[in-house]
Amino acid sequence: MKKTLLLLLLSLSFLACDKKKTSIGGKVTNAVTGEPVHNALVNYVQCDGSGDNCNETVIGQTYTSLSGEFVIDQKTASKSKDKWIDVYYDNKKVGHQDNIGLKDKSINIVVTL
Image (cartoon, rainbow, N blue to C red; front, side):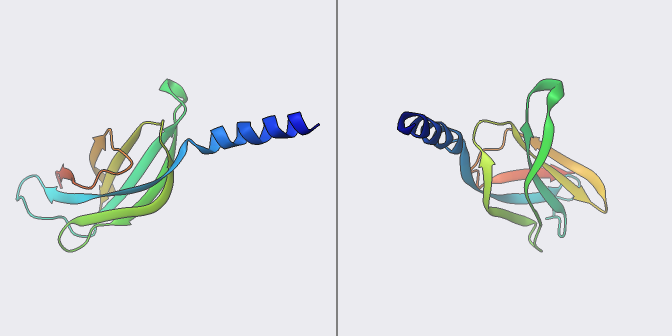
């Protein structure tokens, strides 16, 4: 019984190792004017699954500041999944960037409005 309980606890600890805190940030700018984009919705998304079986999960989201900057902090994400950012402005998707890491701090997203 003790061995079974120990094995169960050890298995659960390995599963928990895949979750990490994430802290990302960057800036959204207008492709035409080069100006910062204020009040754009930034979604940090990961794929739970692979290929055609990808279930998108929003890790965190925030709006850009007057300077076009954003920070998504203190959210838990899986370190082994594909991650990306989608940017929305006036309820339309205007930007996308793939391969976002858990600690990327200088993400620059250029969008066409």
